[in-house]
Image (cartoon, rainbow, N blue to C red; front, top):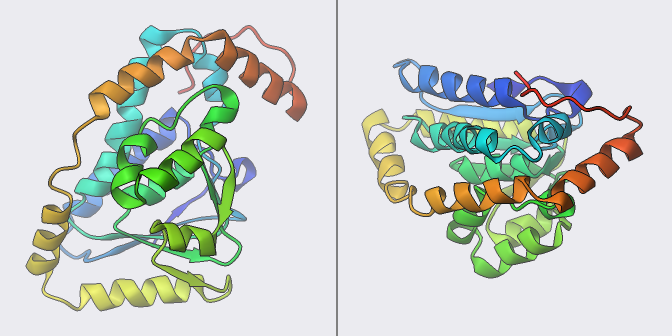
Length: 246
């Protein structure tokens, strides 16, 4: 089992997190003893998405945003390309990048307490990975509903949308996910790998355009003002920092 462990930040994603996810997925894929992986979050969140402090540091600097977005997409692609199936056990909040990470996983199980959302439009952005992958998983209508409103949905609605395959009570979620992983691991590994790779064989289209469109949004006053307002509401001191989060 692979656990995201940054509970004090609701497992928010910064650049270090994205690098580590990519590296861990590559390591797992090269380990012949691993046949399936369960991915979950520590605490009350799967992941609250991108770290708002990282957004603050990147706001207005489109030149630095492009490589950041490619790092994000590379991390999610590493989940898709991992040689073994990755099962998401969504144990709570899955906002922004948290929902996008669920889209990258092969199978999604959710606790009854789980909530899913693309919160990016509320800070002047769009979920760059989600607007490309979402229509393939949930269809266009559900993707538009989430990506244009910023609303969150519960696990039952997420299952109805096709994002979630099973909903379980919070106390048995991990047991059910581990049981499913064991069931998959009991099958011949080559057949599982070929099945996954063929389902995911056409998952690269549209991302270059998404990088450019999303990068431009990072440079808008609307995004910068929304991030400033969010941080002020959280009680952060005003800051003029412009260095990237490492």
